[in-house]
Length: 254
Figure 1: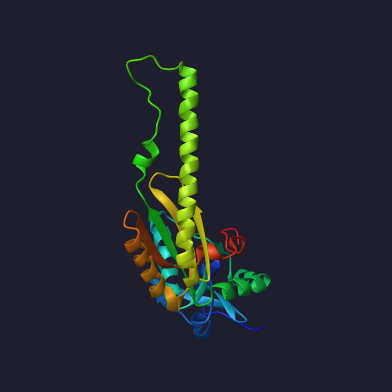
Figure 2: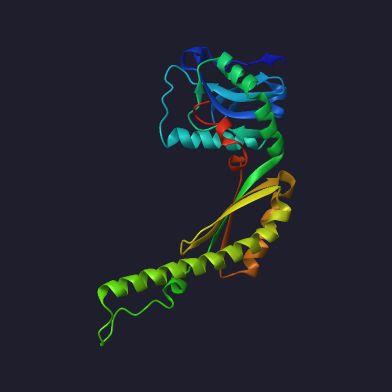
C-alpha cells in the first residue's frame, strides 16, 4: 500500500494535525493542498482512503463556539464534493506518522463505514404538534365547593392521571410515527426515529438517503405536511452521516 501527504505547513510537526474527516474519492485522487473556509487543508492517504487535515500550529487551543462552528462548516463543504466519515470536533494527532498509522490500523473499519454511506447523506426530520389541550383533557378536578379527598388520595389520583396521559400519548405518537416511517423509509437506505412524549415535539428522526433522492424525499415530507396540517414537519440537511457510522471509530480520543 502506498501513502502520500501534502503538508499544509511547517508548523504541523509542532502543533500536530487537526483531523476533520476520513474520506475516499475526490480528495484522495487529487491529494493536494486546498482551501475550505479560509483553512488550508491537505489529505494524508493510505491506500484508497485518507484523512483530511490541517496543521494545528504551535497553539492548538480551540475556542467555543467559533472553532466548533468552523469545524461544522468545513465538514459541510467537504461533504458536498466527497463521501466522508466526519471526525469529532477537537481531534488532533501529533504528526503525519500518527495519522497514517490510524488509517492503517482501522483501514477495514473505515472502508466498511465508507461503503455504508457512499454517495449518501443524512436528512433529519422533526415533527411538532401542540398537545397542551390533550394533556389537560380529563384532568381530575382539584377545586370546588364540596370537600375533596384527603391530600394523599388526591396526590395519588393526580399521579395516576399523569401516568395514564403519558401512556396514551405514547401509543398515539408511536402509531403516527410508524405511519410516517411507512411513507419515508422507501425513499431512504436506512432510518431511525425516537418517539417523544414532549407536549410539542412528537418525532425526531434521521434518514440515510441517496444524494440523487434528496429532493424526492423532501417532496414526500412536503406532502406529509399537506396531508397532516395539524402537525409541523421540519426536514433538515443534507448533513454528513453522523448517525449512520460507528462512532467509536471517530471519537476525540482517536
